[in-house]
Image (cartoon, rainbow, N blue to C red; front, side, top):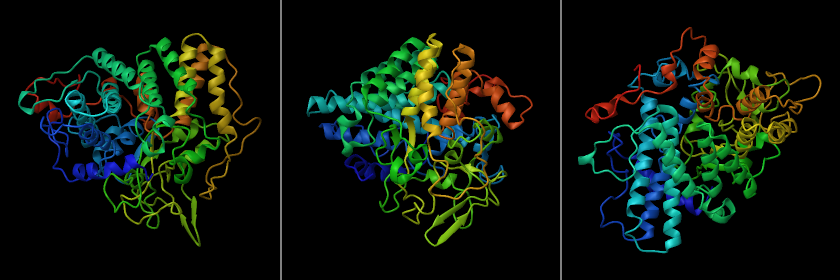
Length: 518
């Protein structure tokens, strides 16, 4: 991860992490960023503000900003329980786990505030792009990255909150009068921003020195997801096909390698957009990954806090013998060798089941630093496998079941040829035996049956990567699935939307109206 682009993020992260607690994020200056006209003179000044915008994806604190991805996306679904000890330990995550987030929920506020802070930095860039000097092509690339990040922010907001305030220019704190924009208007803006951002360089066009920047493929992939969420299947099919035809991405042969530091985090051909981290940075919060500490098993010897505990429902979803189960989930009794020393996962205090998220667990043999903030563990936001499965889903919804099978079965084929032995651990707690053919190709062309097969594949392929809640909301299944997985007798469908943080409502002087039912 020692790239030019990531190195530029250090100063922005320091400024972000040492700032005071956030207030109303709709009217706050991006931390560490100058906003007056006299500051913006060159493309380099825009670039520094862009660095700050990217940095809002991995700012630190306790919990770190990235924690909201799994705390909402995994724990707020049928894939994971809170874990991490008693309900009083991170009660905000516990509320989300039960589908009962309050208007004062700290994790919901963290998610909201960081996305709006990123959007504010992007708006500032787009406001100032016309007044700075420099190469026009460079300025355009900076602006299009800002549009990608702004769209990413609004995507997270509209899918989780519904109608949301949508500032498109940098706001004077003394003149904020925003109310909520309709979902339709937000989606229209997301589509516009991502269409513009699709003019960015490809992954190879940026080069290794810029690993971590938004690309044309990332913009098209997110645009395809936006179309899928709106059930615009014709547009989704065409857009996702562009990502495939670009030729920048491929499936990694070994599924487990995607989540190992040495292979999965080194500009993997499957990575379309990641939150990148560095190591050996002097324990700077936000530079190295802090998220792994939350998801480690919470053993005395291994460390960690044991959050994001996989549910019984998720374990049962994996077909017999599917190797993805052991690369997604760590089980009680698993042994992690580290030279002459071995570590056994006990989970004596944090997890009822003894299970934890394997994908973001930095195993003892991989650790490069004894400090919390200093691991180069990337967080995969969009992978090529997700694009293939969304493309298969779009094809099926468009009445092209035979074509959909081709792309669905590419993902299954990779899974069945993945080694069934994790080279980084000894696991005897999970039974990988099976009868017949391992993960046979899906053959049905019945639209309903194929839809179910694709939804199943999306769940097991993307397990514990923070996507599940979004997928359940998109397909109208969140209330049903959350209630079934967590034995919740009655789950009000209102909880399919998160509550607007009460502090934002109070500070808006009545302009922002709370979601119904809260």
